[in-house]
Length: 254
Image 1 (tube, rainbow, N blue to C red):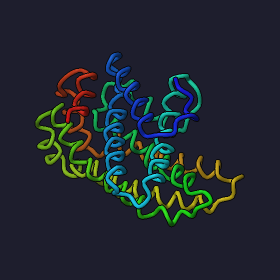
Image 2 (image 1 turned 90 degrees about the horizontal axis):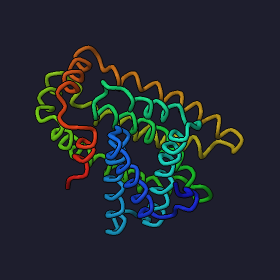
Image 3 (image 1 turned 90 degrees about the vertical axis):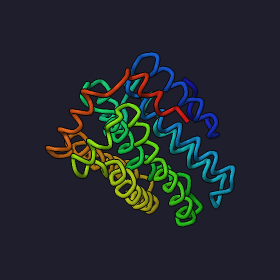
Image 4 (image 1 turned 120 degrees about the horizontal axis):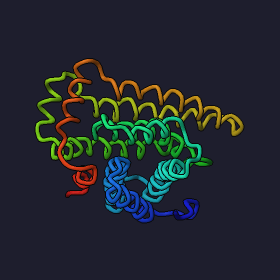
């Protein structure tokens, strides 16, 4: 494992994510589902920085790297049986269970990463500069996350071709990914970043712990989205196609 403190660029993040993905494919570990999606998003952010999409491309790369490091730190800590945030531990623990479908693994990772890590990364990158200056680019990065939602659904349909029919039959589960990841997470992350920016250094860790405990409570909605939602997820899981490695590969197809 590389020293994460030395990581400064998006390209280095992409390489580390590739390592996690390949390890997961080799060992058939569901941890690779989130890593594969995350690498896809990171590559998209890199492309948008190069095209001048953001107001401040350099700052956006710093945010992207700081954000990714939160995930990487949690991943390696868990691998080494070291302490990590409660929300990330819940996400990683779930990967050893049979019943969660790919969608649920993704949501668990997004819950920990967007609802907790994004606000921390934004506040840290903005130290001494003012968080308000970041708001426009913060919203733009969420536009990118939103644009990836339909790609995710298409990727999941490769794993299970009639997924969309099941989701529609089960009611609101079709909006499950969009509502959870975009509305709740986006607004909550920015609010949390502002809270951190206004908190004294000696109280930051306590605020992060409090936020972590709130974020982990979302897990029950991910795992048990009502009777019909849960029934649909069970049906999807039983009939999912392919090995864990093949499911991870579905995210890597262009």
